[in-house]
Image (tube, rainbow, N blue to C red; front, top):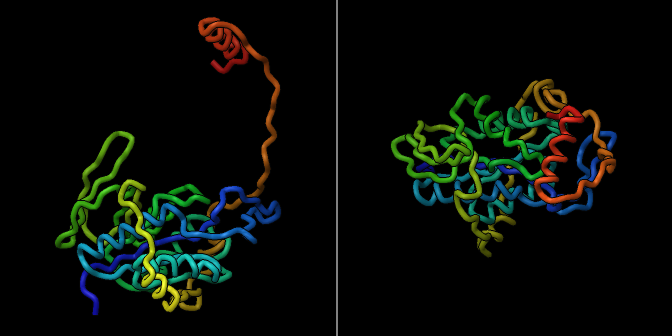
Length: 265
């Protein structure tokens, strides 16, 4: 039986390239034929979990939601040092927005068991919202601290950490359990070892479908999403305009009067 902290790291499999196409009918990404990787921001979450484990003991469990082939991202996480892996995969989970995703992942966490820390990357490269971690915390009714860039200490059920905001650096302290999202400044991700890659190939990926979770289909997937992509299109670029010439003072005056003319100012 493991002693120490129960650490859950949420990861997502994303496309390796940023040059992707959308299906105009469904509003979803066309993923066929494009290599997939662990979301780069989630690599920092994995590293954070592993460092906490190395210092305080415990288990690092990785959790993802996606199609069956997202299993590879979980194996990559095990190769880095994670102990267990869970994949939420079911056709009824498809089409979820960030809220439905966060809700489903939170229910997966409850199914997995007790936890002390849930760690998420700051955001994903395909969504760029940073909402899933805080939404999980809302469902689980635990504190959430975002933009974490340093774990100072974890002792007697209390975690002390730092985070960077536009206004400066905050030093925060709160009780476990909690959800955190981490920035790239927190640690440099390690590389997988040969031993880790061998372990990853043999690892059992625990699958969680709605048969195990027994969630109301109206609360998950596309049906449980509060936001939906209605239409995707490439905006047309309007090249109408004029070229203004002159020295800096003349240009500033000309732009000022032009903005007044069109009633921008």
